[in-house]
Structures are given as structure tokens and as C-alpha cells.
Length: 295
Image (tube, rainbow, N blue to C red; front, side):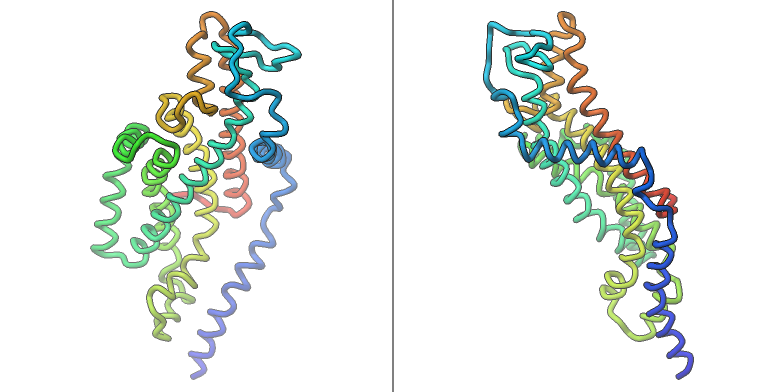
């Protein structure tokens, strides 16, 4: 009886100890690089929300008399090969970027989280089969697989990012599985078996909270990769159909006249690069603050 009471107390104390440990970790908001990354990402979100009000021109409006024009008071970042304002197209392009990232990351989580939880907690033959499936997906080039899936589902933003989410889900599953393996045999999980709690209850209430940290870090890193793949798909005209504005399409248009105006690729290229770097910076800061090693 005393042993059971002690075990129950240890189960209750585990979340409290985790909370105290979290409070002792390095404060995130005292890192200048992280603050700069968060500030830049906040600007991207604001640009997407306020695009109708802050965009200086209609992103689809053509001015054939001002084709491939350099920066000016009327067009701060110049115009493309049919006279459309580059800045306006970049601002409006934030919308498909954010929508695409939400679809891609949500798909990754919906598939990858239960995949990794089940694989790590069940072990044995279940783990072996699920991880071999993950290896089979990961061995294929991600972009090629995303193009193949998008071609099967149909070329549009939703299908493209569903494909990206499917491609990235094995990576998240492996991270979740690694975290589950570290905690599934700890006392606070073993005690729940002694009390006869269902397996799904143990996984959701006691195992899943222990892998939230690594999952958050991996999601921010995968978001940067998802943006890169989304840009590549839009560049190929698969994710977003021209003439709808997107960062990938802006790069594709700029490459058409790169010999005439090499600087035209700078604005969309720098925007994509800074956004990816900002997402990676957030992921690195979370990993350092939570003292997580991604296996």
C-alpha cells in the first residue's frame, strides 16, 4: 500500500518537476538573434493580413510601358517583364506562403505524431514495420516525391502542401519515436501500467507531453524546409498557378530576364532566404533553451 502511494506521488510529481525544470532553462526572449527572427516573421504575418491596404499596386495589374523597370518612387522594387509591381507581388505572395505552411505543417503533425507515438510505444514488430516504411519514404528525394504526389492529386496549393506534409511526416515520426523511447520505461509511465490505464490514455496523457519540446523544435525546422519546397513548386508553376502572386513565381519571372536585369532576383530571393533563416533561428533557440538533442 505504501509502495503504491509512493508510486502515485511520483506520477503526480513528474509534471511539477518538468514545470520547474522548464522555468530554470535559459530565457528565450533575451536572445537578440531570436528577437530579430521573431520580428521578421511578425512582419511577414502582418504583410499577409494587411496586404489589401499596404500594397502600393494591384499585383495583377500590367503596365507594358514600364516593363523591367528598376526601383523608382512609383515602384520601390521595380517591375517584372510585363510591368507588374514587384513589391506588391511579394506582399500578396505572403498569403499563399502562410496558408501553404499551415497546410503542410498540419499534415505533417496529423500523420507524423501518431506514427511516431505508436512506433515508439508499441515497439517490436510494429516499430520495425513503421520505421521501415519511414525509411522507404525518406530514401526518395523529397522534392521529386512532392511533385509526383502533387501530379497525382492535381496541381494547386492545397494539394502541393498536402504532398509536402506527407513527405516530411516520416522525419517528424522518427523524432517523436526517439522521444517516446526515452520515456516509455520511466517510472511515471510504468506506474500507469500498474494501474491498468488504457494504452491510448498512457500515450496521450503521460508520453506525449514528454515529446512536445522536440516536436516543436522539429516543426520549426520543417517549416523552413516546407517553405523552400513550396517556393520550388511555385517556381515550377505547380503550387500556385500564374499569374497569381507567389514568391516562387516572382523568382521564376525574374529568371526570365536575369541577363537584362540580374538584380531582379534579389528581392524575392532575399525574402525567401531571410524567412527560412528566421524559422531556423527560432528552431535553434528553442532547441538550446529546452536543451534538446534531435537524434
